[in-house]
Length: 377
Image (cartoon, rainbow, N blue to C red; front, side):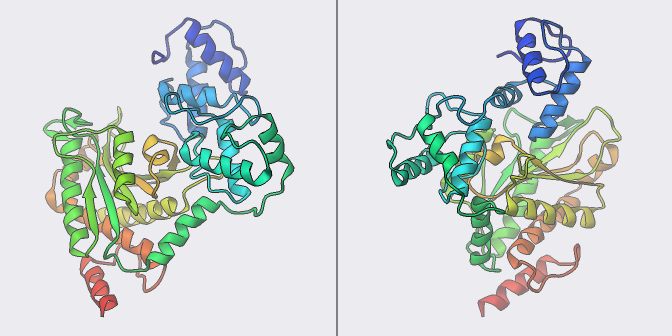
Protein backbone atom coordinates (compact mmCIF):
# COMPACT_ATOMS: atom_id res chain seq x y z
CA UNK A 1 0.00 0.00 0.00
CA UNK A 2 1.03 3.62 -0.47
CA UNK A 3 1.96 5.72 2.55
CA UNK A 4 -0.97 7.92 3.57
CA UNK A 5 -0.71 11.29 5.29
CA UNK A 6 -2.64 14.51 5.78
CA UNK A 7 -3.98 15.90 2.50
CA UNK A 8 -4.42 12.51 0.80
CA UNK A 9 -7.80 11.25 -0.44
CA UNK A 10 -9.33 8.28 -2.19
CA UNK A 11 -10.43 4.70 -1.44
CA UNK A 12 -7.32 3.98 0.69
CA UNK A 13 -8.12 6.91 2.95
CA UNK A 14 -11.76 5.79 3.14
CA UNK A 15 -10.57 2.39 4.37
CA UNK A 16 -8.40 4.02 7.05
CA UNK A 17 -11.29 6.22 8.17
CA UNK A 18 -13.57 3.18 8.36
CA UNK A 19 -11.10 1.22 10.50
CA UNK A 20 -10.55 4.17 12.85
CA UNK A 21 -14.32 4.63 13.19
CA UNK A 22 -14.79 0.95 14.05
CA UNK A 23 -12.16 1.33 16.78
CA UNK A 24 -13.99 4.32 18.23
CA UNK A 25 -11.20 6.75 17.36
CA UNK A 26 -13.11 8.65 14.68
CA UNK A 27 -16.73 9.74 14.65
CA UNK A 28 -17.44 9.38 10.94
CA UNK A 29 -16.01 7.24 8.17
CA UNK A 30 -16.87 7.66 4.49
CA UNK A 31 -14.81 9.05 1.61
CA UNK A 32 -13.52 12.17 3.31
CA UNK A 33 -9.93 13.29 3.03
CA UNK A 34 -7.04 12.55 5.35
CA UNK A 35 -7.58 15.69 7.41
CA UNK A 36 -6.33 16.88 10.81
CA UNK A 37 -9.02 14.83 12.60
CA UNK A 38 -7.87 11.64 10.91
CA UNK A 39 -4.23 12.47 11.64
CA UNK A 40 -5.06 12.96 15.32
CA UNK A 41 -6.93 9.64 15.39
CA UNK A 42 -3.97 7.87 13.75
CA UNK A 43 -1.59 9.38 16.31
CA UNK A 44 -3.84 8.17 19.12
CA UNK A 45 -3.87 4.66 17.69
CA UNK A 46 -0.10 4.66 17.17
CA UNK A 47 0.55 5.80 20.70
CA UNK A 48 -1.75 3.12 22.10
CA UNK A 49 -0.01 0.42 20.04
CA UNK A 50 3.58 1.42 20.70
CA UNK A 51 4.25 2.57 17.14
CA UNK A 52 6.12 5.66 15.97
CA UNK A 53 3.64 8.48 16.65
CA UNK A 54 3.89 10.46 13.44
CA UNK A 55 0.26 10.52 12.24
CA UNK A 56 1.30 8.81 8.99
CA UNK A 57 -0.16 5.47 7.90
CA UNK A 58 2.77 3.41 6.65
CA UNK A 59 3.05 -0.40 6.43
CA UNK A 60 3.45 -0.95 10.19
CA UNK A 61 0.50 1.26 11.15
CA UNK A 62 -1.70 -0.19 8.41
CA UNK A 63 -0.89 -3.74 9.53
CA UNK A 64 -1.74 -2.83 13.12
CA UNK A 65 -5.02 -1.19 12.08
CA UNK A 66 -6.01 -4.24 10.05
CA UNK A 67 -5.03 -6.56 12.89
CA UNK A 68 -7.11 -4.60 15.40
CA UNK A 69 -10.29 -5.56 13.53
CA UNK A 70 -9.90 -9.28 14.35
CA UNK A 71 -10.86 -11.11 17.56
CA UNK A 72 -10.07 -14.72 18.43
CA UNK A 73 -12.43 -16.92 16.40
CA UNK A 74 -13.23 -14.40 13.69
CA UNK A 75 -11.01 -16.23 11.17
CA UNK A 76 -8.89 -19.41 11.00
CA UNK A 77 -5.28 -18.86 12.04
CA UNK A 78 -2.28 -20.74 10.69
CA UNK A 79 1.45 -20.39 10.14
CA UNK A 80 1.95 -19.14 6.59
CA UNK A 81 5.60 -18.57 5.71
CA UNK A 82 4.91 -16.68 2.48
CA UNK A 83 2.19 -14.46 3.97
CA UNK A 84 2.50 -14.22 7.79
CA UNK A 85 -0.74 -13.68 9.71
CA UNK A 86 -0.88 -10.72 12.12
CA UNK A 87 -3.63 -9.38 14.32
CA UNK A 88 -5.21 -8.99 17.72
CA UNK A 89 -6.68 -12.47 17.36
CA UNK A 90 -3.16 -13.92 17.05
CA UNK A 91 -2.13 -11.96 20.12
CA UNK A 92 -5.13 -13.34 22.05
CA UNK A 93 -4.22 -16.88 20.94
CA UNK A 94 -0.62 -16.45 22.11
CA UNK A 95 -1.79 -15.09 25.46
CA UNK A 96 -4.29 -17.93 25.94
CA UNK A 97 -1.77 -20.65 25.08
CA UNK A 98 0.75 -19.09 27.46
CA UNK A 99 -1.82 -18.98 30.27
CA UNK A 100 -2.47 -22.68 29.70
CA UNK A 101 1.22 -23.48 30.07
CA UNK A 102 2.29 -23.70 26.42
CA UNK A 103 5.33 -21.75 25.25
CA UNK A 104 3.98 -19.69 22.36
CA UNK A 105 6.89 -17.27 22.58
CA UNK A 106 6.67 -13.52 22.95
CA UNK A 107 3.05 -12.33 22.50
CA UNK A 108 3.54 -10.05 19.50
CA UNK A 109 0.47 -10.68 17.36
CA UNK A 110 2.45 -12.52 14.65
CA UNK A 111 1.65 -16.19 13.99
CA UNK A 112 5.12 -17.73 13.74
CA UNK A 113 6.69 -21.17 14.05
CA UNK A 114 6.77 -21.09 17.84
CA UNK A 115 3.08 -20.21 18.05
CA UNK A 116 2.27 -23.08 15.69
CA UNK A 117 4.38 -25.50 17.78
CA UNK A 118 2.56 -24.47 20.98
CA UNK A 119 -0.82 -24.77 19.23
CA UNK A 120 -0.03 -28.27 17.95
CA UNK A 121 0.99 -29.35 21.46
CA UNK A 122 -2.27 -27.99 22.84
CA UNK A 123 -4.30 -29.76 20.14
CA UNK A 124 -2.47 -33.03 20.83
CA UNK A 125 -3.05 -32.79 24.60
CA UNK A 126 -6.73 -31.93 24.17
CA UNK A 127 -7.45 -34.69 21.63
CA UNK A 128 -8.08 -32.35 18.71
CA UNK A 129 -6.95 -32.74 15.12
CA UNK A 130 -3.27 -31.78 15.25
CA UNK A 131 -3.09 -29.51 12.20
CA UNK A 132 -1.62 -26.32 13.68
CA UNK A 133 -4.70 -24.37 12.55
CA UNK A 134 -6.73 -22.42 15.07
CA UNK A 135 -10.27 -23.03 13.83
CA UNK A 136 -13.68 -23.17 15.53
CA UNK A 137 -13.05 -26.43 17.44
CA UNK A 138 -9.71 -25.22 18.77
CA UNK A 139 -11.17 -21.86 19.83
CA UNK A 140 -13.96 -23.65 21.75
CA UNK A 141 -11.41 -25.81 23.55
CA UNK A 142 -9.27 -22.81 24.41
CA UNK A 143 -12.24 -21.04 25.94
CA UNK A 144 -13.43 -24.06 27.94
CA UNK A 145 -10.18 -24.64 29.82
CA UNK A 146 -9.11 -22.75 32.90
CA UNK A 147 -5.60 -21.30 32.81
CA UNK A 148 -2.93 -22.97 34.91
CA UNK A 149 -1.73 -19.64 36.24
CA UNK A 150 -2.75 -16.00 36.25
CA UNK A 151 -1.08 -12.79 37.35
CA UNK A 152 2.16 -13.35 35.44
CA UNK A 153 3.59 -13.53 31.95
CA UNK A 154 5.40 -16.88 31.75
CA UNK A 155 7.45 -16.04 28.68
CA UNK A 156 8.84 -12.98 30.44
CA UNK A 157 9.18 -14.78 33.76
CA UNK A 158 11.45 -17.17 31.88
CA UNK A 159 13.52 -14.18 30.79
CA UNK A 160 13.91 -13.12 34.42
CA UNK A 161 14.86 -16.62 35.50
CA UNK A 162 17.51 -16.80 32.78
CA UNK A 163 19.07 -13.58 34.08
CA UNK A 164 19.01 -14.90 37.65
CA UNK A 165 20.62 -18.19 36.66
CA UNK A 166 23.26 -16.42 34.56
CA UNK A 167 24.74 -15.00 37.76
CA UNK A 168 26.36 -11.61 38.45
CA UNK A 169 29.53 -12.13 36.42
CA UNK A 170 29.72 -10.63 32.94
CA UNK A 171 32.24 -13.14 31.59
CA UNK A 172 30.77 -15.34 28.87
CA UNK A 173 27.61 -13.34 28.38
CA UNK A 174 26.91 -12.66 24.72
CA UNK A 175 25.75 -9.16 23.82
CA UNK A 176 24.86 -7.92 20.35
CA UNK A 177 25.60 -4.23 19.89
CA UNK A 178 23.55 -2.73 17.06
CA UNK A 179 24.80 0.64 15.72
CA UNK A 180 21.86 2.19 13.89
CA UNK A 181 21.79 2.94 10.16
CA UNK A 182 25.10 2.51 8.27
CA UNK A 183 26.33 2.40 4.69
CA UNK A 184 24.30 4.71 2.45
CA UNK A 185 21.79 5.24 5.29
CA UNK A 186 23.41 7.98 7.35
CA UNK A 187 20.45 8.51 9.66
CA UNK A 188 20.21 12.04 11.02
CA UNK A 189 22.78 14.39 9.47
CA UNK A 190 23.60 17.87 10.73
CA UNK A 191 26.69 19.57 9.35
CA UNK A 192 29.49 17.02 9.24
CA UNK A 193 27.96 14.84 11.97
CA UNK A 194 26.18 11.66 10.83
CA UNK A 195 24.12 9.52 13.16
CA UNK A 196 25.48 6.32 11.58
CA UNK A 197 29.08 7.35 12.31
CA UNK A 198 28.33 8.30 15.91
CA UNK A 199 26.52 5.00 16.48
CA UNK A 200 29.42 3.06 14.95
CA UNK A 201 31.98 4.85 17.14
CA UNK A 202 29.87 4.25 20.24
CA UNK A 203 29.50 0.58 19.35
CA UNK A 204 33.27 0.12 19.04
CA UNK A 205 33.91 1.87 22.37
CA UNK A 206 31.26 -0.28 24.07
CA UNK A 207 32.60 -3.42 22.39
CA UNK A 208 36.10 -2.80 23.76
CA UNK A 209 34.87 -2.31 27.32
CA UNK A 210 32.65 -5.37 27.19
CA UNK A 211 35.44 -7.58 25.87
CA UNK A 212 37.71 -6.33 28.65
CA UNK A 213 35.26 -7.80 31.17
CA UNK A 214 35.23 -11.17 29.39
CA UNK A 215 31.90 -10.66 27.62
CA UNK A 216 31.31 -11.77 24.03
CA UNK A 217 30.45 -8.53 22.26
CA UNK A 218 29.22 -8.79 18.67
CA UNK A 219 28.45 -5.85 16.38
CA UNK A 220 25.41 -6.37 14.17
CA UNK A 221 26.71 -4.66 11.03
CA UNK A 222 29.84 -3.58 9.21
CA UNK A 223 30.75 0.08 8.94
CA UNK A 224 29.54 0.24 5.34
CA UNK A 225 26.37 -1.83 5.70
CA UNK A 226 22.81 -1.09 6.79
CA UNK A 227 20.83 -4.28 7.47
CA UNK A 228 17.06 -4.14 7.90
CA UNK A 229 15.62 -4.42 11.40
CA UNK A 230 14.60 -8.00 10.62
CA UNK A 231 18.16 -8.84 9.57
CA UNK A 232 19.60 -7.24 12.71
CA UNK A 233 17.20 -9.22 14.88
CA UNK A 234 18.04 -12.43 13.00
CA UNK A 235 21.74 -11.77 13.57
CA UNK A 236 21.08 -11.66 17.32
CA UNK A 237 18.91 -14.78 17.19
CA UNK A 238 21.49 -16.73 15.19
CA UNK A 239 24.22 -15.65 17.62
CA UNK A 240 22.18 -16.84 20.62
CA UNK A 241 22.51 -13.39 22.19
CA UNK A 242 21.67 -12.79 25.83
CA UNK A 243 20.92 -9.10 25.23
CA UNK A 244 20.50 -6.81 22.22
CA UNK A 245 21.47 -3.12 22.44
CA UNK A 246 20.58 -0.76 19.58
CA UNK A 247 22.37 2.61 19.49
CA UNK A 248 20.90 5.71 17.86
CA UNK A 249 20.77 9.49 18.08
CA UNK A 250 17.59 11.45 17.45
CA UNK A 251 16.45 14.44 15.41
CA UNK A 252 13.47 16.79 15.54
CA UNK A 253 12.08 19.70 13.59
CA UNK A 254 12.42 21.79 16.75
CA UNK A 255 16.01 22.57 17.81
CA UNK A 256 14.75 22.67 21.41
CA UNK A 257 14.16 18.91 21.46
CA UNK A 258 16.96 17.30 23.45
CA UNK A 259 17.88 14.46 25.80
CA UNK A 260 18.21 10.70 26.04
CA UNK A 261 15.43 8.11 25.85
CA UNK A 262 15.37 4.31 26.06
CA UNK A 263 12.88 1.88 24.52
CA UNK A 264 11.88 -1.74 25.14
CA UNK A 265 9.26 -4.22 23.96
CA UNK A 266 5.71 -3.57 25.17
CA UNK A 267 2.23 -3.51 23.72
CA UNK A 268 0.49 -1.02 25.97
CA UNK A 269 -1.99 -3.56 27.35
CA UNK A 270 0.16 -4.93 30.15
CA UNK A 271 2.42 -7.13 28.03
CA UNK A 272 6.04 -6.05 28.33
CA UNK A 273 9.49 -7.59 28.33
CA UNK A 274 10.28 -7.50 32.06
CA UNK A 275 14.03 -7.76 31.55
CA UNK A 276 13.96 -5.33 28.62
CA UNK A 277 12.06 -2.80 30.70
CA UNK A 278 14.43 -3.27 33.64
CA UNK A 279 17.54 -2.86 31.47
CA UNK A 280 16.07 0.18 29.71
CA UNK A 281 15.48 1.74 33.12
CA UNK A 282 19.06 1.08 34.25
CA UNK A 283 20.48 2.51 31.02
CA UNK A 284 18.23 5.55 31.16
CA UNK A 285 19.12 6.41 34.75
CA UNK A 286 22.85 5.84 34.27
CA UNK A 287 23.10 7.95 31.12
CA UNK A 288 20.96 10.78 32.50
CA UNK A 289 23.08 10.88 35.68
CA UNK A 290 26.48 10.59 33.96
CA UNK A 291 25.94 12.83 30.94
CA UNK A 292 23.58 15.49 32.18
CA UNK A 293 21.39 14.93 29.13
CA UNK A 294 17.71 15.62 29.71
CA UNK A 295 15.92 12.49 30.93
CA UNK A 296 13.27 11.64 28.35
CA UNK A 297 12.42 8.41 30.23
CA UNK A 298 11.77 4.87 29.01
CA UNK A 299 8.99 3.86 26.62
CA UNK A 300 7.43 0.64 25.34
CA UNK A 301 7.26 0.02 21.59
CA UNK A 302 6.28 -2.75 19.20
CA UNK A 303 9.02 -2.06 16.66
CA UNK A 304 10.26 -5.04 14.66
CA UNK A 305 13.63 -4.82 16.38
CA UNK A 306 11.78 -5.85 19.56
CA UNK A 307 9.21 -8.30 18.20
CA UNK A 308 11.75 -10.23 16.11
CA UNK A 309 14.53 -10.65 18.69
CA UNK A 310 14.21 -13.66 20.98
CA UNK A 311 16.36 -12.05 23.69
CA UNK A 312 15.57 -8.89 25.70
CA UNK A 313 16.31 -5.84 23.55
CA UNK A 314 16.73 -2.13 24.25
CA UNK A 315 17.10 0.80 21.87
CA UNK A 316 18.79 3.96 23.16
CA UNK A 317 18.33 7.38 21.53
CA UNK A 318 21.35 9.32 22.77
CA UNK A 319 20.90 13.05 22.27
CA UNK A 320 19.42 15.05 19.39
CA UNK A 321 21.73 16.00 16.55
CA UNK A 322 19.32 18.85 15.79
CA UNK A 323 19.92 20.36 19.25
CA UNK A 324 23.10 22.49 19.37
CA UNK A 325 24.05 21.46 22.93
CA UNK A 326 23.46 17.74 22.38
CA UNK A 327 25.22 17.88 19.01
CA UNK A 328 28.30 19.51 20.54
CA UNK A 329 28.52 16.85 23.23
CA UNK A 330 28.01 13.96 20.79
CA UNK A 331 30.88 15.26 18.68
CA UNK A 332 33.31 14.81 21.60
CA UNK A 333 35.09 11.42 21.92
CA UNK A 334 35.33 11.86 25.71
CA UNK A 335 31.55 12.19 25.92
CA UNK A 336 31.07 9.00 23.90
CA UNK A 337 33.40 7.25 26.36
CA UNK A 338 31.09 8.32 29.19
CA UNK A 339 28.08 6.96 27.28
CA UNK A 340 29.79 3.62 26.61
CA UNK A 341 30.76 3.24 30.27
CA UNK A 342 27.23 4.12 31.40
CA UNK A 343 25.70 1.43 29.18
CA UNK A 344 28.20 -1.17 30.41
CA UNK A 345 27.43 -0.28 34.04
CA UNK A 346 23.71 -0.63 33.34
CA UNK A 347 24.24 -4.14 31.95
CA UNK A 348 26.27 -5.00 35.05
CA UNK A 349 23.47 -3.72 37.28
CA UNK A 350 21.01 -5.96 35.45
CA UNK A 351 23.00 -9.07 36.29
CA UNK A 352 23.80 -7.97 39.84
CA UNK A 353 20.07 -8.03 40.65
CA UNK A 354 20.71 -5.65 43.55
CA UNK A 355 23.67 -7.60 44.97
CA UNK A 356 26.51 -5.25 45.98
CA UNK A 357 24.98 -2.42 43.98
CA UNK A 358 25.94 1.25 44.27
CA UNK A 359 24.06 4.53 43.75
CA UNK A 360 23.26 5.49 40.16
CA UNK A 361 26.15 7.25 38.42
CA UNK A 362 28.83 6.17 40.91
CA UNK A 363 29.73 2.65 39.73
CA UNK A 364 32.85 2.80 37.53
CA UNK A 365 34.48 0.63 34.89
CA UNK A 366 37.28 -0.09 37.40
CA UNK A 367 34.63 -1.27 39.89
CA UNK A 368 33.24 -3.65 37.28
CA UNK A 369 36.66 -5.13 36.53
CA UNK A 370 37.40 -5.49 40.25
CA UNK A 371 34.05 -7.24 40.79
CA UNK A 372 34.74 -9.62 37.89
CA UNK A 373 38.16 -10.51 39.32
CA UNK A 374 36.75 -11.01 42.80
CA UNK A 375 34.03 -13.34 41.52
CA UNK A 376 36.64 -15.33 39.56
CA UNK A 377 38.67 -16.11 42.69
